[in-house]
Length: 148
Image 1 (cartoon, rainbow, N blue to C red):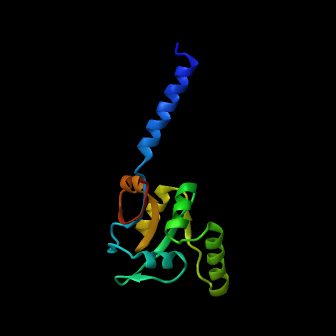
Image 2 (cartoon, one colour):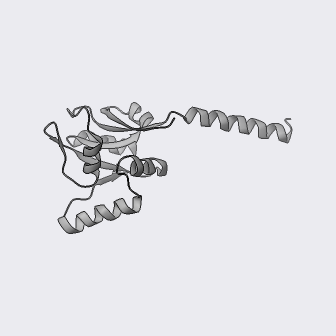
């Protein structure tokens, strides 16, 4: 039997190892492999998510939102649109009410978003790099954030 202090030591070491394994996380921008889009500028990406029609290499970019992971959402708000969640949602709602701008598709399941990306031409979304690597039919076109 391990003494109580020894148990805490083992738990702390396990947490440290798990935390170390998580360093190096990344958030990437992905699209379907069939989309000819190879890259997109940061400004065009921000415009697309703010509701402005963006065309890159003759293709209309169609952004999709990922919800369900609080950390991923925070990275999106900080690194992609550079505004708080509340400000972003207010902006998107005002565009919908004033100009009839369609609301963005929202997914909380990686498999469902994979299907959406492959079914719509040049749809883009952000996700964890590890999720993007495990999906079939999608390609990474931009690194958005990386944990150092």
